[in-house]
Length: 346
Image (cartoon, rainbow, N blue to C red; front, side):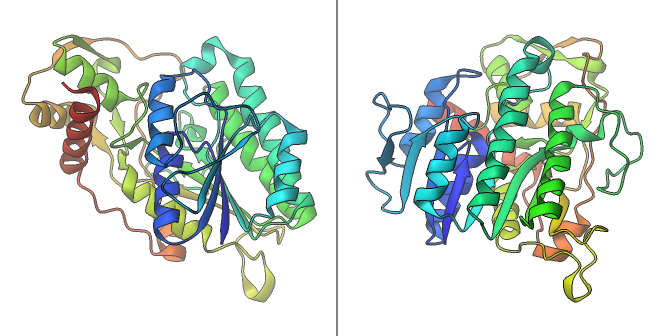
């Protein structure tokens, strides 16, 4: 099938595209290659997909030099006309939207970036899927929509009307917008609430990247809430497998007894995580073991917009797709540290 992967130069988009190509699918990837974090890392991910890191012109399709079924277009989701033209030309079977302005803390400083990319951009994508019908739109939501919920594990049936960051609010908005298009226009949509994803090629603003860099350089780690944090850390290969399986099983709505959504819309939401909550201090110890170095800890209070714990109930996703994450944190951290040392030659 022909897939569109948005955010293809990102952490998960890169990994998913490699998986799709290995499975024999055709992939068109788009990305704005913004400078929210190191552009060179994004270009390196594209190079791993056969896209040369020479200057890439806006809206120009570039073919992979070593993967015959992969093409890349530099494009922003906010550009509705170009998005519509791309859909009209390509006629995609499945769309996986992983492009977004990421980061909870950055949303406190630059709120408009989240409205542009996560709200305006997502409407453009929904409109394109409406006017150029696809078999399935899978999009990235986030565990951040659970806000300060105390009930564990988090379930998609929980109330999520109290976000504690604009990033979380934008992701909840995506879920509501997708439901509207599923209900009104029959666009089959599945939202995946990602929990903390880690592994090789990861984002520099995420804890594992920051902590590994600090430990290897002998710098102190900023440990918030005095280390009393828990996260459902999920290895990137497990996430990619879950996204791939989900993409192949579009929701049907209430036809033939399917009761996924009360309105009868072909709409679903799943948590996608490791279904285990790991203490932050245990995570740090795994990094210490993998690097062979002891961390210097700077214990700090909780940051605005952050939450003390996340923990995913993934039973619904497992039931529908057979998803079963199986990478131990110790192994996943070791894989990341090996990649980091090789990539940065340290």
